[in-house]
Length: 253
Ligand SMILES: Nc1ncnc2c1ncn2[C@@H]1O[C@H](COP(=O)(O)OP(=O)(O)OP(=O)(O)O)[C@@H](O)[C@H]1O
Figure 1 (spheres, rainbow, N blue to C red):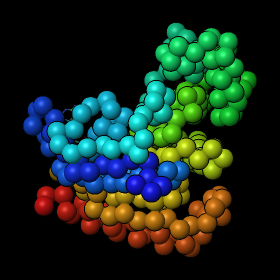
Figure 2 (cartoon, helix red, strand yellow):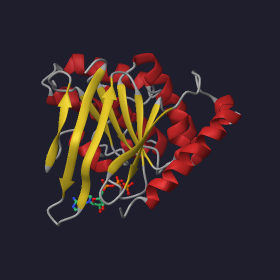
Figure 3 (cartoon, rainbow, N blue to C red):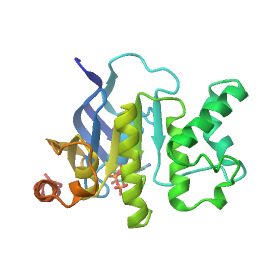
């Protein structure tokens, strides 16, 4: 697999209640790319992330890594920030390092540096309840990145945020990715978000879930407000919307 980080081959998952979430899904993820999984609600996007993270095992098929995984190689950001309410922000972000057995002083330094990178350098001692929704999500992002993962999994991380916060976090995530180039697998059902953020989009159909289209996003970098207002962005969003619409029609096949 040249330049590949992982490959999903013939991935199938039937839940114990009989729901065939995925059937024969194929997808290769290249090192350093920003790949979005785009699809309608229930098409199996979160199931793909859980399989990649090793939280569940496939019924058939395989998740093959280009080299064996070490602890901390995969970071996961969920739809909710899932911070521990009884722990200060610094302690929340240090958690993966504590679990890895890192010395506390070194862990604190790494967690503080991670919080700086997401713009929360002034909130190390704050409690989660003292942060806005967007700030909590930044802290969740810092926690997912604190082990310097090779792959960052994001499951609709900004879906619950207001539009202005969401756009700002889109830009901040992109700036981090451009600087550090962790491979990113981003789940969304927003066409606009996927086109703005990604270097590539995999469109899924539902019942059972499978990738039906694989589209490069050739918009120039860096991306900013002029990207969002440009005609190329608009044209690409239209093309992706149309393909997504067709994928939804393929659901019952
Ligand atoms: N633990 C579970 N047990 C049974 N069925 C499940 C379970 N988790 C998900 N499913 C079903 O599997 C299918 C895929 O679910 P999944 O959450 O992966 O989709 P999704 O594309 O991420 O949806 P959304 O965009 O709404 O989050 C759905 O039909 C869902 O109802």
